Length: 419
Ligand SMILES: [Zn+2]
Image 1 (cartoon, rainbow, N blue to C red):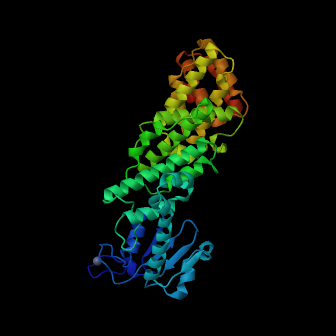
Image 2: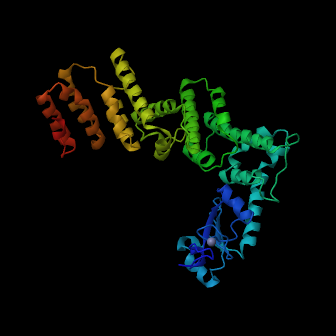
Image 3: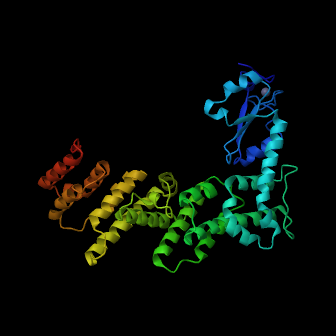
């Protein structure tokens, strides 16, 4: 093991030395690269070593990689160091200064996207129409400029805006403008691709300017469509956006229950209509990963219980035009299973005891298990939860009928747990 003069291990002095990968979305690393912080490798104790590290810069817009080789990488060794599938996308530059020129120019180019917003009196209208130009890499370039740490990277400032806090406030409100324009486009039926794609680019991947939570409550003041159906989809997207923003910030979403309920209601509705789920509807599309990141387990449980209680009540009061309980249950089971909420599903049924007389329960469960296209794992979980009433009432004959029905869809059912 190579060691630094201070005695600490210095792996940067061995083999191909230290490597850094800087993506065009990683604002602090871009700043480090441009200010020379990455020029030297360091020992494990943090001493600066007199050897240059290799730096790879990744342009996520073009997919290209730019490599400035460090002191320990000879030209002949380069091709071997780059994975084959990346080789034809990788360009080697002379050194860190050349890489800095290239990245500095790219950042400046992306900053120019903001020019009309800053210089034109109709900047806000421009943003409303062209918000799609303000991609994650463009916002990252803005954040690099706003850091104030890189000499030579600046942008024109609107007259009257002077202090760093004012500048940041100005751009933070423009970023909010991008999000609002995104939501309005979808409301007006002018969405492109899917809502999930927009959330991914304009929220997940994008650096946040200032404190975006300052603007998040004003979402509730946006004009809503008069049509109930459209208004409900609009509310869904607003909550999905809000939840994604809180998830990105790593903070609890105070409206998580509202999001969970809105999502589950549409998720089940879309499936009742024959589609595979919201992911297949561009206007409502959110990924399973996003649901896992944005729906806390307790909120999932709350939403499931609300939806089932509502369905049961609606069926009891008037069953015309109301989806039947079994269909809703089947979809809730499938959705919870796919999203990783099996545990919450069980606890929903604990809290949602069927109101039927105990002698009818076994038939209800057996009927539910006979529904076609059930996900067996989810169905068994639900059936077990529903059967708790029978266990408590010690209805052994009923339970054995339920077990037979379970075995019919998933043979090795573990029944010993029950007695
Ligand atoms: Zn050292």
